[in-house]
Image (cartoon, rainbow, N blue to C red):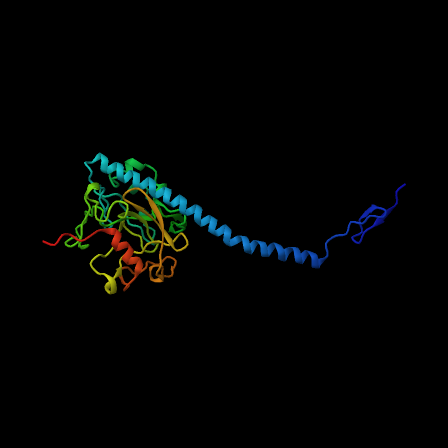
Length: 284
């Protein structure tokens, strides 16, 4: 008969064999190692998540751009319209005014998919591509938080149909696909991620008159992808544009609208957008 012996924890096992448990010091060492490994892996996991979100964002923009192109192809090369303001209409690519309040525009997908309010809606039908996966903004309605329906805006120089002055007396408004020559289609941007505290209507305005030391940020691009925004160009290619100037990425204050039209002298990000938004009209 084989004898038995008790180990340090009082468990009985075959004689001559022990089953020692972890000491407190050993357990603490294991916990410390796991914590160190987790701290090393967390940045890599976060970076991987950002890359995935960036890919999905560009894919969403690709779908919206395809609808934009199909509309032009079916309408004699005329581009979908873009306009500022909260008044909905059938003459623009989307309608609706996003805000930090409980307005139903924040969650109304009809303004994105119905032909009465969106020229490209019938070509897309789904509201999902209008929202960047990295946009975590919500709006509280009747005591519940809902994601807002749209994260992207359109270049104001792509068939502006509003009545306000955006500088059209000196810079080109592209009315047709074939008008997009300067800058060329691979350089002229159409859609961009816009900051949650800046986005309102479907128009992203870039001030082209005030340059260099007089530059202004009218609307703020988003920085959802590690200080970068998804942006789609007229030829259908997309980029994740990383911003260089901290003034382009001011601190976000929850549920507060950021001040727009801010003086930002010699901002390289503003200059980058200006160069790719439109070009001067010929001097007569």
